[in-house]
Length: 283
Ligand code: KIV
Image 1 (cartoon, helix red, strand yellow):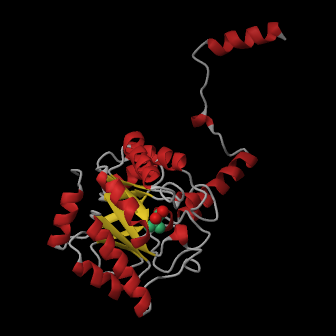
Image 2 (spheres, rainbow, N blue to C red; image 1 turned 30 degrees about the vertical axis):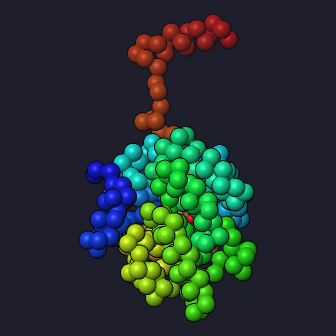
Image 3 (tube, rainbow, N blue to C red; image 1 turned 90 degrees about the vertical axis):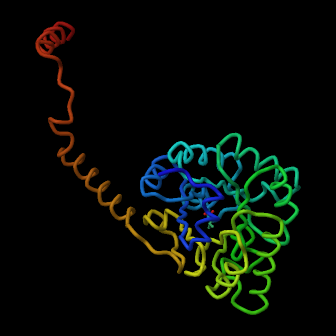
């Protein structure tokens, strides 16, 4: 499949073709996603929970994001890979934000970066865009600042909250972001933003009326079990399949059912007799 970029995503929006987007954190998953024909891959800071077992995304570092993004890039050379700027990588200053966005491009070869927030991060967004980096905005529920939002709660469910989401979307579009992600907002609000903006508006938990869908691959494949948000559709139960396979392995080793003859490297023809004679002498 030829690699798609921002221009193709804008064309897809105009043509009413849905953009497909999944997170990935490692090489094998990236190869599966590329084989499945996914358009975009997010190396999300959700790796904190899905890979490292942290309680949230806040502890995730730039170095971790770079290592995982590099692996994903190698596994999916033809997908549009987005690096997720972790907490602390853009909050301090515009300079820091540009330096860390540049690391994603130079060290991991990603195609774009994503950062959370609207009006309040607009100077960071402008600085990164001015450096020539493709930016995806992320508004609605923003997990890095969920403490301020009163927890992992859907946003835009009241008039006042919906107006704030729309204001953030407008500010980001005006600043020049090429892509926008809405997380956990009502479909009515998402549809309004999608219709108003010319850039592709993607959703995770934002309903059907958006230009594309994102899900966390660990939810889709059923490897993350701590909690499952309402908007997730599980397509497989890899945790169940994996645990069953590993239980069988443990049982086979304990009972001697594994390894079998087919799993052994026997000595070469004639060598066993020589080895047995040598072993006798050595004993
Ligand atoms: O880190 C991530 O996977 C994300 C999604 C929750 C949007 O930012």
